[in-house]
Image (tube, rainbow, N blue to C red; front, side):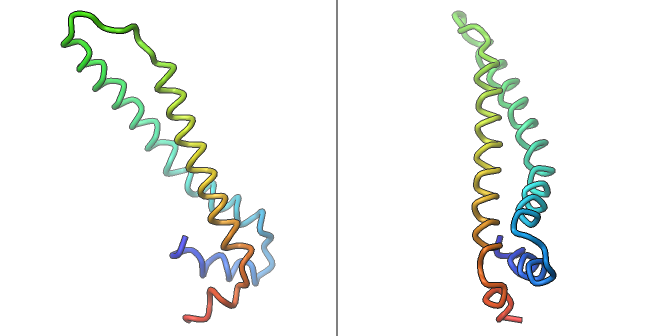
Length: 100
């Protein structure tokens, strides 16, 4: 957020609303977060499946836990991104551009 605070300030000065700025930043983060979470979830499932195969007694597949954990992680990413972006978008734009 610190890297993009000047961008947010310039967009705010140009007339963009806080909601538009939050949507833009959040959608940009989701383009990176969704594939990363999906790949991480699939990798965790495959590795844990290989690990559980080494035991004689195993639990049934609990793929629902992997799906729920992926949804929780994505929800946390969105909540953090919205909160941080909203905080920067509601600040005075001149305070972010003083270092220029």
